[in-house]
Length: 436
Image (tube, rainbow, N blue to C red; front, side):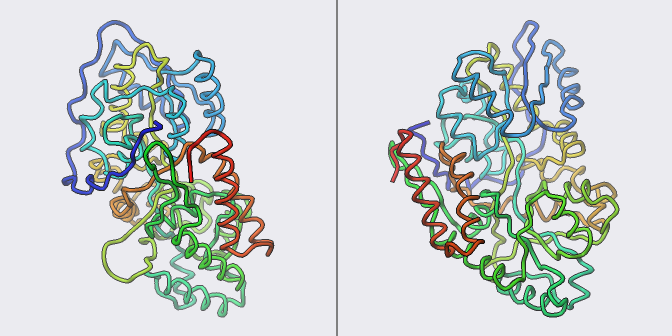
């Protein structure tokens, strides 16, 4: 992992969508049981179809909880050299940290590289940084779009903003007409990937491999532009800073106190599930506002995950087969969308009929709009050349610290980003990384 180069601009030349259900690798013989760690809802139902297709392979699902709970146990098992599963779910931002341990198998040895063309280009860039070694199979994604209350925009006479300039003007209008009772948007102060996705859409680069070392640039020009833009609206009282996924946030969204938000593709499912009948049918989705009008829609990504195979697996060939099937089989992609709202990483998956069903949530909650079409467009507008560093877990936590200081007026946006850069850089160097 120390020698990976994550530049994959050549993948932009990838062709049009390929059919789902490609020819998968041949299953190994003999009775096999694979242990899989994942927090995907309903995955036990999905794997039943795999076991039917491959009767000699049994899947044992363990849900240890989302993200951190799974990562802690997985890191412990890798360091101990025992106790790791065959397959585990790992978010893209945390994948380099696990690859750096040497505990992940290179799936190119088991034919995974032959399936690159079936995935949206930027997702393959996340799991195969140098285009050779393959450290995981892309599972789901979180391309960014804007969700908004159609009734609120109509009430205050503002059009759906297509640019950030239009967004700022609309925010000011809604504040004035509502006498400050309605916030036009919300800034997530405790989720670095949310903020980074907005800078990603502007071409922002936070980490880059440099030979055997790294370059970290958390205070890049795009990051400064985005943070200063949002801080201005925060100071003017036009947007809120409610904690994401909190009761306060859902109450505001359901009560008409919040007009828009920038959400990943998996976000709308949360609205349908958390708000129930409150504001049902009033929401819509639109492309992320752009810094320049016209042209191709550009987006960033928040979240999404992959499936890794650990070096402790005694059946890496079967584990690779399962990971490929789980993310390229139309049966699995459809089930994971219906059961867990997972937005596919496969190119063909974006066009699956199940995603276009508007009579079921989350599209039903969004007024019967085919919101998947909006997010499919966003996914194809995500910049391929985006990298994560192995010390990102610290970077993620330190973001919260610096943004809190900014919100309290202790730091300007530029100072907050400079502090984020300095403290994260010091941490990386202290932990043995060659980084500047």
